[in-house]
Amino acid sequence: KAGKTVYFNNPIWPGEVQCLRVESILYQAKSDYQEVLVFESSSYGKVLVLDGIIQLTEKDECAYQEMITHLPLCSIPSPKTVLVVGGGDGGVLREIARHNSVQHIDICEIDRMVIEVSKKFFPELAAGFDDARVCLHVGDAVEFLTHVPEGKYDAIIVDSSDPVGPAQQLVEKPFFETIARALRPGGVLCNMAESMWLHTHIIDDMISICREIFKGSVHYAWTSVPTYPSGVIGFVICSTEGPLVDFLNPINPIENLDGADQHKRELRYYNSEMHKAAFALPSFLKREVSSS
Ligand SMILES: NCCCN[C@H]1CC[C@H](N)CC1
Image (spheres, rainbow, N blue to C red):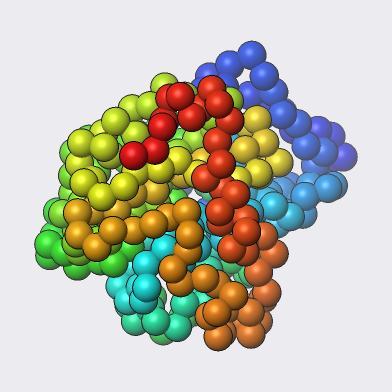
């Protein structure tokens, strides 16, 4: 409804609503998995919406894509093989490409429409698919991971939507077990982990599952994304047994990476100070997720 506002309320954040002014509707269709909407907003550029939930906007996607990618990749000396679960918009792929040590990137996205829509309306993100190291698998990541050889990946990034609908299985224990099996010793997982203001029960569950499965360290980190509910989103980041990973002090700082900024698009959000700050938690959360 051009010139009108669009309202975003959802049972997973009851009692509150966000709204954005719509300049024009650019795309609206149902895929095999969800309803896909793209619109031009007045203040955040183009917006991608899946089943009525904002996935990204041109203005603030950098905070999420850069942090979910560089928090893990800058925490290990030389990431070579990386798996992205979800991430069909290509933004995480764009960020991984900054790491010259990376030789192979698998991405498993369930909904082909998300990929096609991103290529058409979000070229700044879909550019991630152009990298020669990327190998695209369209399908269910739960299924995909059962065929992955043990210890294949240095890092796995789960860039999922909310755990309702297609992404429901991605917060359950069996899925984390297949992730741990697919990581090499000392490998790292960075998993979208919702908002400290809205979803402490989801965060609690994820942290306790990861504490059981990942015998390295388990932390919660967070970033500001104004167009996500409550304006913040977090990540559970953990390492398997093996070389100790000190997530709080990046061993592979992005400032030392040649190519990180020569990339045709410079970093807009992530840097080593933001990396360290991401692990500073408010007291109410610290008590809940006191990182091991
Ligand atoms: N790759 C785009 C971000 C997808 N991540 C989710 C979007 C919806 C949010 N409520 C939770 C994160």
